[in-house]
Length: 240
Image 1 (cartoon, rainbow, N blue to C red):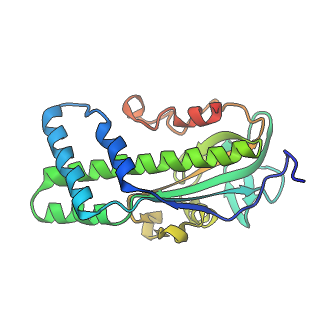
Image 2 (cartoon, one colour):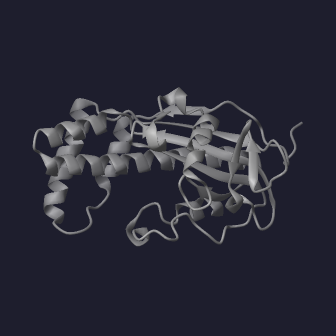
């Protein structure tokens, strides 16, 4: 029988998401900032483009990967090594890494380029902004599913890092993608550690037993923290 201190090693949980629900949630979000009426109209046009041209190919893949060795700043999991000392908890026991990748697919970015080429920059920017909002919704769903899996195993979430954050070097991106089995949903790594499709994101969470809420967030030093939907997301997951 598996004990609470053991983390189940499973293959990646991969999911392709239905467009309708994601688009409905994004469409319901208020338009903030200046020129709200114009921006709302452009968002409606962008939403229609995504729906009519079937531009959204949303998917995520994640794994809860047990540590291969006791936790130290150079964490070992799934045959990979990540130098992530910020993930070491002040108390409790770190037993695994939760590694996830999410994407909105390649079609939105291709359509944005086409709109710029067709001298429709306002709509291009609106579609690009919509793509970012959709990617956020995909990542939120992946995080919720990974949290549910962790809770079922009696585990808790610690801090979150993304490659390129303070505390996790950009060149860790390749290892994170391998751990999350990103190739299964069509995500690959290109030059400059950029993911393709570009509307993709990766993340790593500390997972373990009785992990405390972290005193830091990857959003701490961001100038957009006050108006960004990501701010406070990590704290919400840790509180669950």
